[in-house]
Image 1 (spheres, helix red, strand yellow):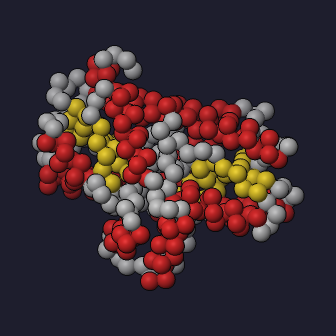
Image 2 (cartoon, rainbow, N blue to C red):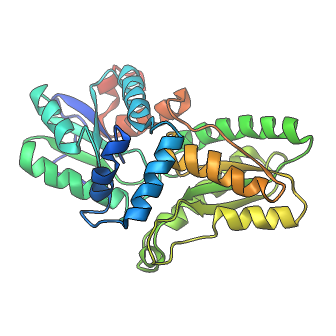
Length: 321
């Protein structure tokens, strides 16, 4: 998306970066309002809201904003450019971030969603919210929107680093090779049926990561989808639970989950994997291990910097990228 004519490349205007993330409630009391934002004003049943409050309470609240700010700070150091953070469903909002950028004299921004795989249910909504906010508060700012980055070589390298570390720990604990299940957030089946590229991109990331690891390190892997929504409509699978069941039936007593669809610790990692899937697996005699999230991994920050640099020219970073 270019929201004004021309490109940011070779543009002498003041430039910066806008990181877009999902957002997380500041407190348990904020969760009902947060969920209304997530669902576009549509209410969840009270039982579902209470369940989500319970999950956030068990993990002590989400660290997403703290981690996103750390990513922004590291990226600013890497690029030598201002980096702003806008949350789709909470504070600081995308409009808040744009107001700040305008107040600091920005004339051009590269907008990058912290979600590697493109779906109209995620990146499509970020783009929509950004366009609406820009029209209201920052119409003079040129914005380039990074649409796809699931196969960026430095993203694969960053994921490979975490996977290699996870495989090493899993081998040490299990005393043998441990099956790997790559995970990403599920989306409604109808989204994929209508031509959404999300599932294909997740599978491509998994395949690229397996190749990067080499057959001797990752001879077999599975891909599963987690964190299905609390709605009646069908969501894509296979589920993580189904893969744990199959591996348990095959005699495996350890499984390594590698969440490749997430770049930060959040409720999907800290509750869904670290609590729910571990309890599910334990009841079947299986120990769940997982790879560390990317968070502010230096390789991951370099991946973000590379994508930004490609759009604004190496001169913006003093020729260091």
